[in-house]
Structures are given as structure tokens and as C-alpha cells.
Length: 143
Image (tube, rainbow, N blue to C red; front, side, top):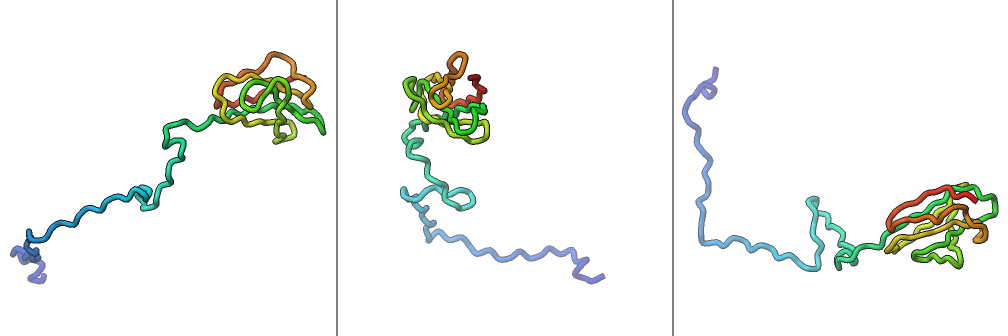
């Protein structure tokens, strides 16, 4: 064995520079109001939408869907109460599949009532459909 491996003498500590009190600690940086806060990864976080900064809620999205094969060349319409709806004339729905018609309604604030029509002429059978703002309704109306 080598003497260095078995030497029980204490080891010398590295020299530490003495603390001085004549220098002032650096001043903390002030946060700029124009810069967005940074995440832990150092990537700026996106600013909040203007509506949420003001404390107002975003308009709710209500989705209405009807599953019905109404035949080639026909169109589905919706009448009722709510933003963009009326009982006097129908709002055209979007044909998203061979038998699926949808309509997105933005900004509803109260209970909505609606009914489906083929070509804005033939009413669906049964009572009116009722839905709440922000909800989704998918039905199979009968004609």
C-alpha cells in the first residue's frame, strides 16, 4: 500500500477569500410593465385576452346538431329563440356529414328553444327543443 492511502493526517482546507463589507450588494432588477412574465423555462407567457383581463366572461358557445338524412339537395334550417334565431325565418345549418347538420350559436345568455325544418318549410314533429347556453344538443328529429 502507498503511504497516501493510509495517512490519517487531516487534509488542508482550500483557502476562502475573506468577506468584505465595503462593497454593496447588487440592486434587484425592476420588472418592466411592458414585458410579459416569463415561465420557468424562460419563455414569455402569452398575455391574457382583453375580456378576461377586464373580468368579463367569454361568450358561451352552444352547439346544435341534427342527425337526419333529409335527401340529396335538401337543406336543414333552425328556427327558435336565441342569438341569430327567429321563429319567422330559419337559419341554415351546416351539413358536416351525410346525415349530420350542425349550427354553432355564440353569445346565448338564456334558455333557448328551437325546432328543425327541411328547406325552411317542413317542420319537425314533436315539441320544441330546449337547451341552455354553452350546452351541446344532438337529436334525431322526425319529419
